[in-house]
Image 1 (cartoon, rainbow, N blue to C red):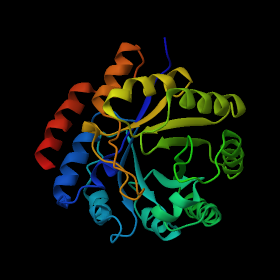
Image 2 (cartoon, rainbow, N blue to C red; image 1 turned 90 degrees about the horizontal axis):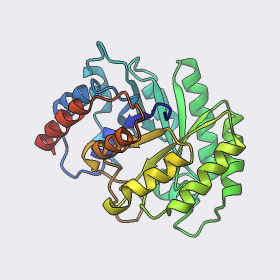
Image 3 (cartoon, rainbow, N blue to C red; image 1 turned 90 degrees about the vertical axis):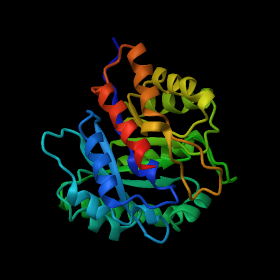
Length: 284
């Protein structure tokens, strides 16, 4: 039987592209419901510029209002700056700090106004800050399977970057395909290379995908050894900073159905997810 699956549910990625601001109390109501579904991690918000992502301006208020009694899920937030990491570390509720790295300099400049070198320096600062407060840092590889802007990219370059990140003490690296353009063959090749090169590290999959390609791409990652997946209930969201068309996230309900067929345990209560989905439909 396949080993257990860890799912990171990310309301942050679902909410961030919405134009209409969701009242803080409605966010709290929804996230509290999600927290009782059994996800490994729930990414509740981000400490980024409210001018860039106004939907996340109330992340601190959301964190303070969460009901974490009887909750086993770890709480994550995203940031792209040392200042944001310091803000995140003020909250005992936060377990993990996500950083949106990329080997694509064009993307980094569009997304967080940093070069690759500046981003690497920022990661060092975030690690230093987080270690003092017992927070885990997770570096995401946005555009982890290629580069849509024409910047140099190769599997070898990715391997060298992961090796450098691992030398900083990091051990888990999710890869994302933001525009839903990566092929199943590339997914398989990249993950098989990473797992064989770094047997002591772990890798995840953050997938933005067109509906007709969802299951095939999850299957490719699963067969390559991936056991950590990100998703969003209802599949909503997308990155608003790419200069590319917004492509929806992987739908959590479909992801759970896929693993049920594989007889792989996710630890997630499907009925709870369905209830959260109904609540979400009344909010957005």
